[in-house]
Length: 257
Image (cartoon, rainbow, N blue to C red):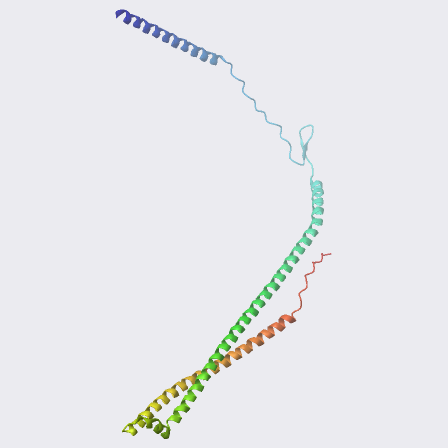
């Protein structure tokens, strides 16, 4: 046991020696690097030199360094004259092309306006046709109602004639003769009241139907007049549409001379 402890102590001492040797070697190397960096010579600084300044446009320098001024009027005139000559020929084609574009657009607008007016005219014509159809249907319905009312009036009038015939004294007496009553006067009076009451009801109904007949006759007359007006309007519009000249195709615009 003591031998083991002694061996461990020796081993630890050896490890400490190795570590201290490594640290000393590292410190020596870092010192050498620092010394080598300090010993390196300094790099020369760059020298900045200004380039020679060129004289401005239109100036020259002679051998002594004096500046001479040279006129640039001739060169500017020579440069502007060709530019103006180049611009003048280019304006005519541009104006011609612009004029052609404007003419084409105006023709398109005119054609669109014509088409729009034609479409509006067709729409109005179709609306008038629909109105005419509805007016004709309404007139036919009113006319059929008037026929029915006239038939009712004829029935009521026939019934009134029958009641007037039955209210005659001899007819009342003949109608009550077969009852076999001891009071024939009362029977005749009751029969007369019955017939008079029915006659009053029939007359009232006949009056209502006659009033309906008057209203229907007025409505039928108005419907017929509306139908006539719409037909005349459509006929006039059809004649106007037929009288319109056929639009020719637009001619291409002429080039300006």
